[in-house]
Amino acid sequence: MNNFFRSVDLMHRAMDVSTLRYQVSANNIANSEVPNFKRTVVNFESELKRAFESEEAAKNGFQLMRTDGRHIPLNVPYDYRDVEPRRVLDYTTTAKANGNNVDAETEAMLVLETQMHYQLLSQLTAFEFSQVNTAMRRQ
Image (cartoon, rainbow, N blue to C red; front, side, top):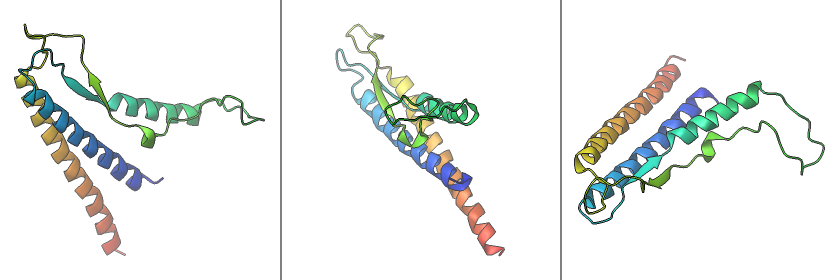
């Protein structure tokens, strides 16, 4: 896969994750006063990093020959397209006396951060396509 399609695909995935993060933070804010409610966060970047590291390790790693399909493969890369965002419930903390662990101010800041991140990704995507557009006009 060439760099253009890979970068556009990654930005598309990151925009989807930003949308999910926005929804999760909005849900956290809506339930910030509900007794025993536990906040949820979205985990994506660490799994994506693991996929990229596995691709690099497979590229530079030692390759073994498999003579049977039942043999355990070694250094098989974890494809970044298989990485899905996960919602993770934070059971470990309690911020309020009612058992709730949502801080509405922190969640509001996360919403703003997510909105800015989404805007940046949309601008980067537009830039990628403008580069292709420019290259096509010059020929």
